[in-house]
Amino acid sequence: MYSKPAELDDNSSVYKTLLESTKAIPWKIDWNTMQFAYIGPQIEALLGWTPESWVSVDDWATRMHPEDREWVVNFCVSQSQSGVDHEADYRALHKDGHHVWIRDVVHVVRTDDGEVEALIGFMFDISERKKTEQELAELQKQLEEYSFKDGLTGIANRRMFDNVLEESWTHALRNSQPLSIILMDLDNFKQYNDLHGHLQGDECLKSVASLLSKAAKRSRDLVARYGGEEFVMILPETDADSALTVAERCRELLAKAEIPHGGDNTGPLVTLSMGVGTLIPSRDDNPKRFLDMVDQRLYEAKNGGRNQIISS
Ligand SMILES: Nc1nc2c(ncn2[C@@H]2O[C@H](COP(=O)(O)OP(=O)(O)OP(=O)(O)O)[C@@H](O)[C@H]2O)c(=O)[nH]1
Figure (cartoon, rainbow, N blue to C red):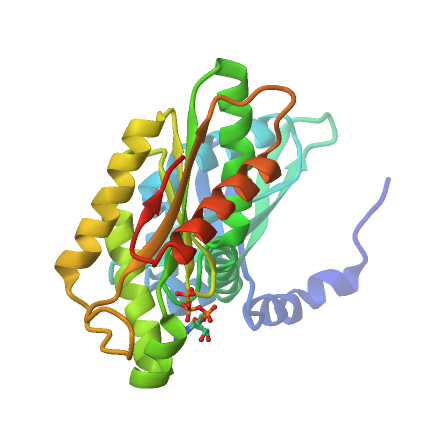
């Protein structure tokens, strides 16, 4: 039978020093009593609780974030009962009340006849790693938002518009429902920029985006920035009369906002030209042709003297 070399016993103080000088915190739990047989003194520096205060597994479980406790305890108990080494990440409670992210890596020690005898493990402080992970997740979220959002005005961008149009088209086709689109373009905006400066131009675009968002009231309506000084609205399940009502509401809201233009040969206020289109899609149509038709109406509105709505 294997017997431990004598120098291992002699070296036990060396091992103890080594264990207690690592950043990872060693511990041992006796399986029969569920009591801590040992925990490294480093635990106090990490969590504030003295080593002596870790008496039983209950101390371990109660010093855990309530949202983590149930699954971590259940997981660790079931893995240990099956004799499987395992690890778990959870938030441990610091004595002063805040939480510290811990990774507990657990080895199940068994007797020669296979009975679980003890659990030994190391706790690692992974708060830095978790912080980085959380920051990355936050950045990812922002990136997703930026890629579907127009950076200047905060409303949906062209990419979002393309996606929503595709989706609304399919829905309308499947359910034989009307779909409306309003294309809008600010009048004489080049002159506005020339007169008031590009920054003021940007402010104007932001105000228009905000008031258009108020004009589209249903949750499935979408207002997007289509391009420079062009905006677009998708109005699902909306017939021609209702779409015209929304377009008129846009014009009224802009008139009420009274954004001064003041260019030569323009009215005193900023205005919009609009093309409105409605159809119940059939298999012979496609979204691009529909958009071209609405764009043609916008063009007519411009040619007809601007600040007007062409809907048929
Ligand atoms: N400030 C600002 N101006 C923009 C932005 N995007 C486009 N524009 C300006 O919008 C103007 C559009 O000019 P045009 O296409 O000639 O149209 P317009 O002067 O509005 O004339 P009509 O459409 O015929 O009424 C250009 O001067 C662009 O520089 C932007 O993000 N910010």
